[in-house]
Length: 180
Image (cartoon, rainbow, N blue to C red; front, top):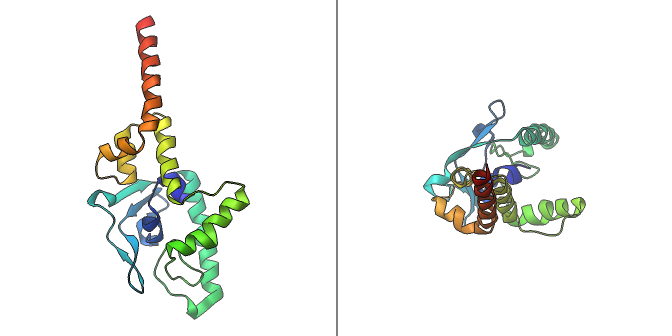
């Protein structure tokens, strides 16, 4: 839910800590990204300078995070001292960082299967978020900032298929203006 509604990168989600989430204000701050080291997973800097950003959450994402936090607390109580407190929003059953491959193999693919959705890449959730917003007429600059792209040109280049459809809408709107 959070990936789809925010367009956050996989590493940004896996590196997200609860201290960066404000459910009352319906926002979260992207401050880091989970990175694979030689033998460890660590939280490093986001991909670009503009990747550090505040993201507004939908009410559905806030509710999903509230429910997730309750489940996570129950998991924490169940494992007791085995819990490794990294303050991660998305972590393993014992609080440790989740590798990208485990996310895909243990969670994401199963979720898609249960929902009856054809297999897609996790990154496709990011593309879907951007495409849906652009199709709804959201200004590309806003979408670019939401995704943490370094320039609006990246957003426009990646989603030119959507903006092509918007060109038709613009022509239709111009026709309507001229008629009235």
